[in-house]
Image (cartoon, rainbow, N blue to C red; front, side, top):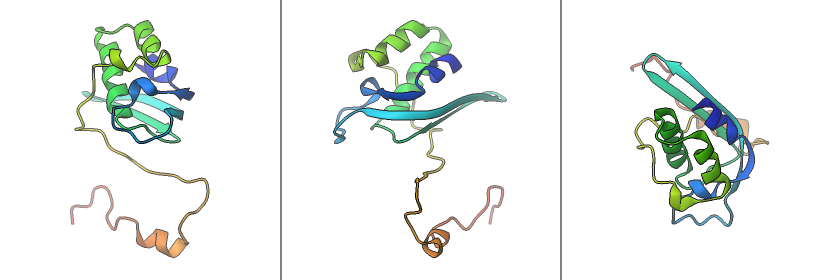
Length: 128
């Protein structure tokens, strides 16, 4: 699974991982970093990219899980997305457990006072 995730790092055409209905003009994006760690019974995958296609993470993780389960070999995984063979990508991860952790911008898009006021007023571990 880690090898499959590492294979997508870089700028590529990820049309194989784009659901129908996207209004985006193209399916190229840059995956900047990936990680896969075990936390007890859970596997935690993190993907950092310049953007995500509509449905990309669910379709990608469905394929990565299939690689981990052995129902899809790494070569088939790599071939599918490199050939942009969306019709071969059938497995999609369920939405539960997937979350957007943060969004970054190369330059400040909001003045500091507005940015500060837009941040959550709780901390992880606080149950107030």
